[in-house]
Image (cartoon, rainbow, N blue to C red; front, side, top):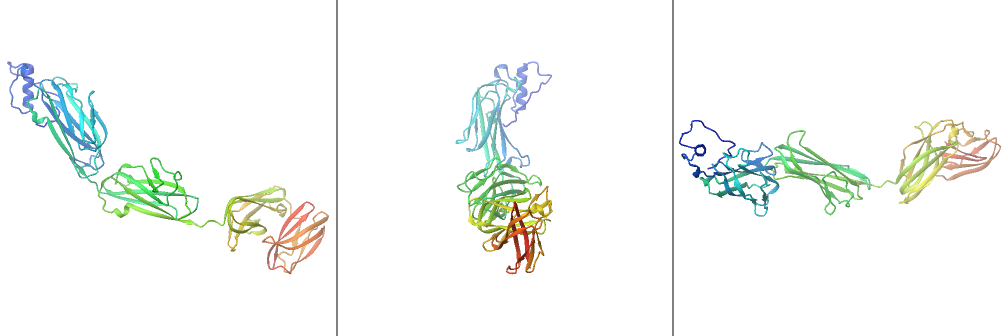
Length: 497
């Protein structure tokens, strides 16, 4: 007969006078067990062992007698003595399916229990004695073994079979064994995945991709494992991973930490993981997938997604640094390139209002180079133009004429005066005058340069005086007039109409 453990016993008044107290207790036990017995003498007292098995899943919403696939299940194996005497040489057996994922086994008292995954047998150490519930209210009359395991991801029920025997044998051996089956319930969960990342990136820049998993329900998903597949596979040690994630450089697969349960309720149904690595020199395809324990998914196509990142063509010039500083009344421009590709030249442009820029000089590029290159240009007399702030930018020109501009830099002159050299008229149609009247007496070298830095005119002129300049031979455009001498180094912009 199958019974649940009896937590206590009853005391009934008015017992028959010819029965002892122990005889009367035995009578009550007999009534409880529906044995139809009368009084026993003390010599007839016997143990009465029974076993009982229950299972409980961590999710209470599973149907009665079942558990969700991959849920955490607690199995309880009870051995109870409801007889009138202590049972001796108590030997219990318990058999489970093999290959269960058992995480914990406990047993009351100092009694041992262990699970063999190959055979499924739970070995329980024999007990020398097991007191009767009527003899011991401290709980020693109960023997409880608890086994915590993961419900298998299959449709096969988990059946547990237990038995117990003792010396002497008890009155009702029919309740010395018990079997209980827990059915596997397969949840219906719509797992959806998406991956986001850049549409394009330059080789060597850091690219970041985010894998998102959502459970559209209607039920939970268990043991959810998101993955990303990277093609081509970055080298080992170059992929930045979140905690718990792993990367296989031979396959290009990133496996994120598994999530035991992913609910279907809004707000708690989303997983998000991100990775980063340097952009390769080829097109990159990132494919996201998500798997879980056994489930019914009515929309499997949304279990994967992909994102392709195009490689941006290399920049003609990789500008590593660009700075402008004041040196007396001169502006000193320094810049460094990390690499150059078909770089014809740099045109230095200046502005006094940060809006209208004019060319003031040229530096020839390196063509194509993978080594760093330092450049320096001095805009002599920039502080003499009468403006406290002067703005500069670089116009980089490729060999095919394509141009791009650097960021704007600004330099501040704390002490400045108006330029002591002037051109008038400017712009000029064919002739202009170079005014050197504010310069110290002496000879000055005068050059006219185009924006390629090529010399298109030269002369030696004396100061202080004015000198006419014939520019009829120049094509319309912008030129630079350099005046050097007597500790003066000035550059003026000249526009030929």
